[in-house]
Amino acid sequence: MSKSVFKVAIVKRGKEGLWREYWINGESKGTAEAAPSGLGCIEIVEAASADEAVKAVQRMHPDCTVMLAGGEHRAA
Image 1 (cartoon, rainbow, N blue to C red):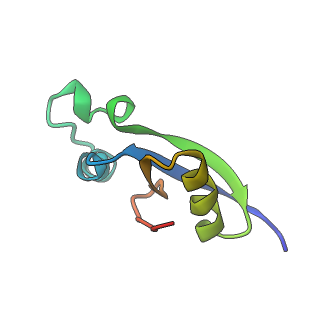
Image 2 (image 1 turned 60 degrees about the vertical axis):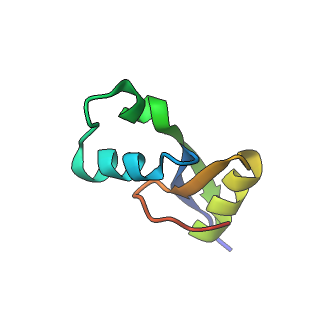
């Protein structure tokens, strides 16, 4: 099976709404906490599917919310 590269967002729990707001609308609400570096980060993962990529990152960061970098949430 071929693999693809996925951008997976690792977001601090409770900050998912701010993360989506920043990346979808480019708004940070004027606080440093709402800037991407204060909310989480993005990991590049090679996997056979988006679900596999999300699950792999979730295992590495079980205390965070993991979603595709485009904002689509996939529970692992």
